[in-house]
Image 1 (cartoon, rainbow, N blue to C red):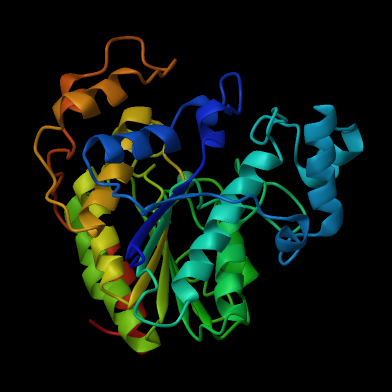
Image 2 (cartoon, rainbow, N blue to C red):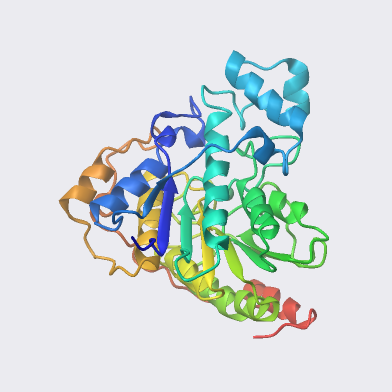
Length: 377
Ligand SMILES: [Zn+2]
């Protein structure tokens, strides 16, 4: 049987696991995105792969063993000591101890490792697209959790690609937050270039335009109100030239969607059309694309955006209205933060109305800065 040219990797663990309480990740995200893609008929036989769980040895390719063991202990005991909390940044508000605090992030990493292995296979039967929407935990550090991220699956995935002989990997991060953990991991690694487009002045407060990491990092901190036109402008005049200069064999895209206008954690004003377009653009930059999830804290916005990204990248026409099966997936979602019924277009449409706007001088200045680095559109 021929292999699927695109694979969608997920797990039922995301269906039952919650970060708990009022945490922004107490919502459902991966399961409804996958269910919506299925409801739209976009997950053919052979395209879905159940995510393995990364082993301790695999996690230790990037993470410190004592930290990995501390997260395992936290899951087993459902508690951390004050010293562990201090040292590893777990058991606190952003990175709580919850029932699957080890297995869930280890599964997200296992999915990204699986994606990397499939994409790195030589020959015409290897997939050209692998999507792990549970991945994209870009803040994780070798020895500590950060920003809801316990382990760093993008780093592990890129390391696996390099270990398998891939010579140039371009990491493109469109999450509203700076991809700090990934940038830091590859300082001094000539086979990896990183690009992060994120909201200026937002946690973790890194990723200034002048921050070049080890020389192959490109940061685009954008102002609140960032619109579809500005995003497209950055892709074409900054990301495109960087990619053409670097000539990646594989693009790894962190497709966090907390930059959507309806997301509660950023002040960016993108429509999901912009992010779907960004995924298509990323796919055009190299022969293969490893697509990950990331932030995204409005459950309807996340499910629609991530399902539509997958649909578009696998060659499907995006319908205006999603039909009854899809509507049922979205009607089941809950969001304690929302005090009234969700607006009809969150339940019945797949794509948002476009959110175009002027391209502001701050955005043009970010691109002008590239010329000093020998890159121009
Ligand atoms: Zn984010």
